[in-house]
Image 1 (cartoon, rainbow, N blue to C red):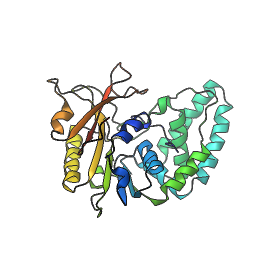
Image 2 (cartoon, rainbow, N blue to C red):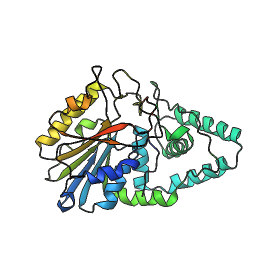
Image 3 (cartoon, rainbow, N blue to C red):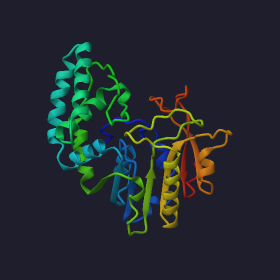
Image 4 (tube, one colour):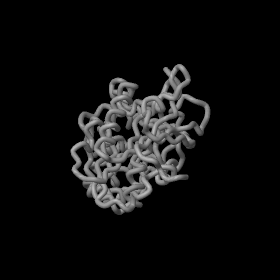
Length: 297
């Protein structure tokens, strides 16, 4: 089982590092609640559901309404989505490069012009995600998807068996859309694990960073509010792991060392094929922040 969308900052390449840094006794916990307030493409969600059978409650959330509705449609019945994508894949792969480009931009305009979110909009969303440049989802200030065409040959747009696997896995998952700050706060159990994957902060002060997963963006005030949420999680005696860039302030100091003073911060390298960092290196450092001591690596 793997994510059904490509997503900037996806964690597929980071799963080994995340797994190694779970609490040492994680698999001994009973009736674990797993909470993902920034689910994105869901790589960590898929991994946790496949590898940790002691997770009995799952809550996921994201600010992006089309993404969340895609999760809900797949949870309910992916059949109509599969039929629609199968037809679009067949048509797309039979076209010339120029015709594919025209189909892409026509589909993008139709997607942006649609009111509300129905099955057809989800089909277009998944088609665009698989055929746009690098699978990047980006909105302008009007809330319009504005990523250019990606140029693929004989491209596989539909993975039918994977969608059915995700459908089965989502049957016991609560799917929310909105503010990250309220997700999971009302849980009444001992063992709760939060994986927090917000839009990353720019590597350097005032640098550019891709945060436009929806029109609202994500700035330092959001990072500070997320820190307050982590403090709340810690006070409840729960556990969290948070991913972000190894960002520096204007004085060269680590932004997250200062913001998360008192918590455990590990630095790792991970290959990125979408340059969300405004940097030339493909293996920039990232931080994994926890409120517990991870096992020795």
